[in-house]
Structure formats: C-alpha cells, structure tokens
Image (cartoon, rainbow, N blue to C red; front, side, top):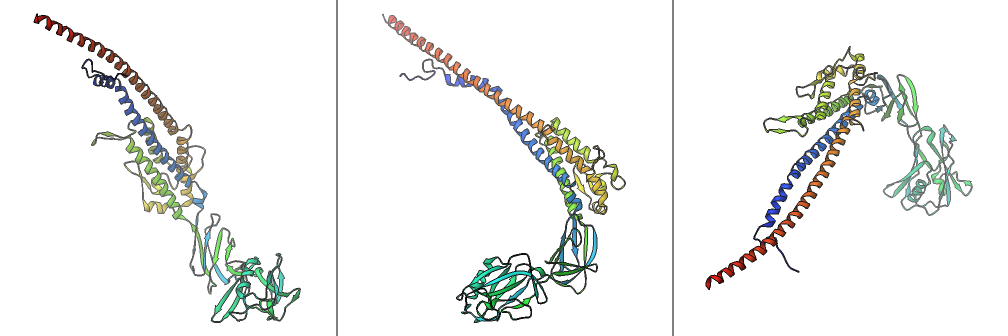
Length: 475
C-alpha cells in the first residue's frame, strides 16, 4: 500500500490550511461553550437559592410549632433532693414538694460463709414477687419461679442460677477476706415488688434457715429465715402542697400534670418547684429564622449585583427571577404583622429584629427580651393562622411563600426546569456544530488531496518540459 502525506506532491501545507479553515467553522462552538458554562453556573446558583429557601421554610415552620411556644422550663431550689422535667402540657406554676420516703427494692443477705463453702444439699428455691404487710406476704399476679440448686454449688453458682431465672430478683456475691455473703435484691423498687423465697427439699419446705438451700430462704419478716432482710420494699412518698402522693419508683410522673419529678433524697424542708415558659428555646428559634433569612438575602444580593470595582457581574445579575425574589423578601420583612397582635407588636422591629440597609436583619437584644415577656402576643405575631396573607403571622407567611416558590410548579422549580432545558438544547447545538466541522474537515481534505495530486502531475510535466528544452538548446 502506498503511503501518502498531504502536500507532498504540491508542496502545500494542507494540514495547516485545513486546520485553519476548520477553526473558522468552529467559531459558533466557542460561544455555545461560553453559554453552557454560564447556564451551569446559573443552575448551581439557583440550586443554592432553593436550598437556602428551604432552610428559611424550616426555620419559619419551627416558629409555628406548638412545641416551640409550649416549651417549658423546670427548676428546683433543692437539686440534691429533686430534679425533673416538663412537657408542653405543663402549666406555668410554682409549688412545694417534700420527700418523705424514697422508693426502694427489697434486699437481703445470707450469713457469712467461707469462700470454699458449697450449698451442702440438693433442693430448689421458689421465688415469688408480691407485697409484705407486716409479717404477711401477698403474692402478686406473677407465677413463682423455681430455681434448682445442687449440693456442690458455690455461692457464685447460686447467684448465677438466680440471675438466669428471671424471677424478679438479682443476686451477687460479696467477699471479705475468707468470708462470702450472697446478696439478693428485688429487680424493681416499690412495695408491690417485695420477694419471698421458699427453700424446698423435694416438696418439703426447709424452715430451719441453715440446712442446705435453707440458707437462702426468706418466708417471714418475724420468723426463722436463712436470709436477713436489709431493706424492705417500699414506695416513694412525697407531699405536693401538703397532698400525699406515692409512687413505686423514684420518678413521679403527672402528680402535677405534665411534670415529672426525679427523687434523689428525702427532705427536711420542702423544695420549691417552678415551671415557666422556655424563652431560651423561643429565642433560639427566632435566631434561626433571622440567620436563614440573612443567608438567603445576602446570597441573592451577591448573585444579582454588579461590582463596579472589579467590573464583574454576579452569576444572576439581571435575572428577573432572582431580582424578583429578593424584592419580595425585602417587602415581606418590612410588612406589618397580623392585626391580632398589632396592639403589642406591629412589625419585626418591635420584637427586636431590625432591618439593615443591606436588607438583612440584626437583633436588638433589649427589645427581644421585652417581647419574650409577652409570649401570647409574640406567638400570634409569628404564627397566627388567618384567612389571608395579611392576617397570617409573619413566620406563616414566610413558610407559605417558601413552600410555594420551591414547589413543583413554583417560581424556582420552573426556573430550574427552564435552565436545564436550555442546557440540553445547548448540548445538542454543540453536537451539531461538531458534526458539521467533521464533515467540512473531511470534505476539505478530499478537495486539497485532489488538488495536491493534480499539482504533483503538473510539476512533473513542468520538469519534463524543462528537461527537453534544455536538451534542444544544446543542439
């Protein structure tokens, strides 16, 4: 196969000529690529705006939440004895609480045994849960649990078997020098969670408290037992403004509606419990709204401005959607609140959110603190649900606006769709230009290759004629 190189026959630089002519055909592609880059920047910019608008929606929705306005604080002037918490259902109030008795689980221990001791007799323990009243035990609804014990079991083995039985008690072994004791405690506190342990040799009860499994018996508060009770099962007992309240645990819920008390110790004098409005939570939500608004407005301002110093335009400078959104936000932030709160708060500046020259908000701490002393009016100002935009609270207006703008048929969603359509169209146009350049390049190479061949033939003929003339001249 012959090896050819364009321009060899004619001496023309065909590759250079074709490349330059193709570059002319590519000129529309340069502009299309610039447009594509601009469209991608716009798409990214509007993506950020959508995200920031969603954050404003979330911050606005938080100021509509009953959890925000219903949030309460709990305080105790004796936290070593009583702590607690409150739910939104609690009413602001102050009351005294005295702790007469803490809830406790029953506990008992064996006599001291040497560390090498074993049970010394086969048998079983029947463990029942119920209530002791004096020397009388009343079994609860749960069926007694039987634990089999072998004569060779150590105290550690016995403890393990009891713990595995799920009988409502737990066991442990305490070692002191060469002595060990088995400790048994109720799993739960409260008078109804006491325990009775019957030691059995087959079906015969062991009542001497020392023979075999009799070491672990506890069947009477006054009679002979293997175990010595160290703590009776008991309920917590408190007084709330002089009214006695009992609880099986040291967590007392809803003695005062919405208030949970955690009892830590008994008291010699009543503790004062105060339930109040949680202004710190509300202040945090208002600050979150301010930050979300400022982030969105600042970004839109930068995207739509023209910097005369650097002579550069923002990515959305002159874009009607972005400029219009910024204008609406500034108008909304300066609007009056609902008439229902007008007597106390007319505008955002009245609650401590003041608009700056650049359109962002700053906090007047003194005004905000004063506003937080009028929670009902402040709640109405932000969250009032009216029958129109004018009667809605400020936070409700912003939430609804953000939801609409970011919705499927909202302004920003439609804008994003339009940009994506333009990007798709641009991609197709670039492909058409590239296809055209490929065809033109192919055609030019074919044309110049033909020219190259013809000029090569003419050059050969010229050389032959010149040679003949030279020969004639010699004659």
